[in-house]
Length: 368
Image (cartoon, rainbow, N blue to C red; front, side):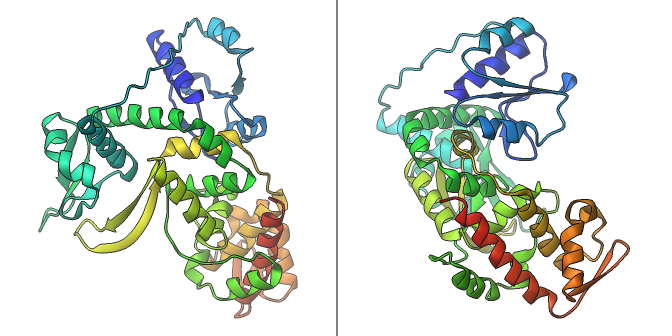
């Protein structure tokens, strides 16, 4: 499987004196390996070729490589490395070892948990031992009235990563079965933050239902992370709105595989903020590698033209990309462009909701 192969490739490259980063964050998800000094991006073909290409080309690499079983030897010879990927025997662990593994996986996926309110039994029962082994520590963020949170140490993170790797390998067939264009879109949305929470309920995706749904959204839902690739930003919007129910359902399925957990979220001061699902990055990577979904470029351009101006009066950063759709909005009389500045009328929000409903219908319709 690609996860074990990339671990061996990265290890061999580092042993030969080549700095290798694995996995490597790019505009759309991750690629399996990067050699920063040479600006080389490498992805292992294990499912969708289109997915490999899209992720590699979302970053300004000087050279990109897609490795399959036919080109692996050639790649190793070029960089002077040898690899040997052994299949690990998965013996049945004792109840105690399984509890340790479950607790490690829980902390790996959740990042940290509020120590006063740990509601995951394996972590509750093994936390003293995890601390004694040097796998977990307690820490606080504020200096006044500190509240303690539990997280993994470096050694704990390394041990937990192996647990997650084994789980992804164990459930590889299930993950491949879950992979399809819709789950690709959902996984891509989840890749921005590795979490999702219950926020909306929509079962019908005809235009009438989408129009009614969009009209009920408050402006906060249109706030997008401008640092994200346009396709990731749109997919994040989808899983927080129209596809939220399906995203939560996918998170629940991953939860049954031990690759996602439902957690209670707390502020650094211990204030309860709500519940959310947090998902293992490796599971998201697998879903994105095994499948693919294309979104027309014009949909991405229009999405930015509709969502970005709601929270930004200066549209210079998207003008070259979404200018056509900004001018369409201006022609419709819902905004006015003044250089790189945009002045919205009271009708812009309603216009954006109608256009977004039409856009979402087009994107979701293309997945079936």
